[in-house]
Image (cartoon, rainbow, N blue to C red; front, side, top):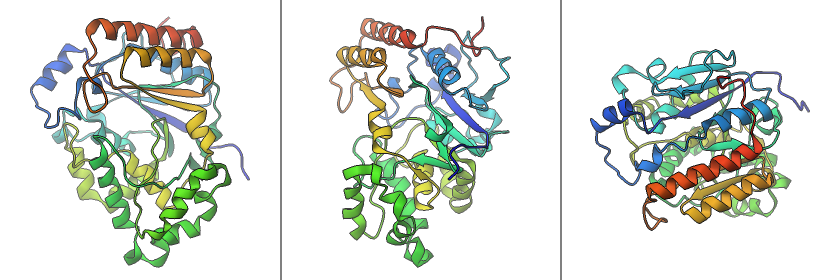
Length: 356
C-alpha cells in the first residue's frame, strides 16, 4: 500500500476582516434574513491568523500552496511575495452577479473554480490551528481524502436545515433508482472495510444499527480542516447545477443553503475516502466552542499543554441557543489576548508568510 502522496496538496484558507470599514459599509447595504445564523460571531476578528500560517509552515512544510481567499482586505503583516502564497479575491472565482457575498457557503461550494488549485486540497477555516507536526497521510492516502465515516441521525442546532439539505441531495443521487449498488446498503457493502474500519471502535455500531434505514440519515461531523478532491466538486456541480447556482447567489446564510459538508458526504457515498481512526479525529484533534471567558481560559490551557495535533476555536460568544448573553468588549479583548498568548507559546517565531 502506498503510504505517501506523490501529488501536490494545496490548502484553501478563507478569511474575513470583520473590522474593515469598507467591508462593513458594503455589508450594511444588505440585510441578512436570519440574524441568529448571521450574527457578529460569524465575522469577528480574533487577530490570531498569523499563528495559523506559522503552524502550516512549521508543522506541514510539505504543503504545495496556500490559496488565501478574501473579500479584498489583507492582514498588514502578510508577505504577498511568498512563492507558496496565492491571494484569491472573491471576484476572481465567483460570478459577478452573485457579488458581494457575506455567506461562507457560496464561497465554499465554488472552490473548484480557483485557478491553479490542485486536485487534492485541504479546506481550513481561520479558527483552526496546527499545534504538532502532521504528515500528508493525515489528510490523503492512496490519492483519497482521509476521513471518518460514522452514521448518525440528523444534526442539532441552527445549521440543522442546511445539513438536511446536504443529505437530501445525497439521497437523491445515491438510491435504488440509480442502481442496486447505489443504495445505502449497496454502497456500504461495496466498501465494507471503510465503513466498519476496526479503528472506529464502538462508534461503528451506530452505522450498523442504521443499516435498516434505506437512506442516509446523517453523518457525524467534526469541525477541523477537511480534505477534498476537486473532481468531487466538479461531479456535484454536474449532477446538481440548479441547487449549486441558487446557493451561489445566497448573500447571507439561509436555511435553503448547502455547505461544504455536502462534498464530504458525497465522497463517503461514492467511496472516495480512506478511513481514519476515531482517536485521530476526536481525541488528537480538539474542537472547542468558546461561549464564556472561562471556556476561553480552558482552551488556552489546552493549547499550552501541547497535547493535540490541532485545535478549532469556534466563536460562540454571542447570545444564542447555548450562550446566555453577548460577550462585552472588555471580555472579548481579554479573551483575544489570552488565546494569542497561548498560541504564541507554541508558535513564537514569525514565518515566511509574515513581513520581517
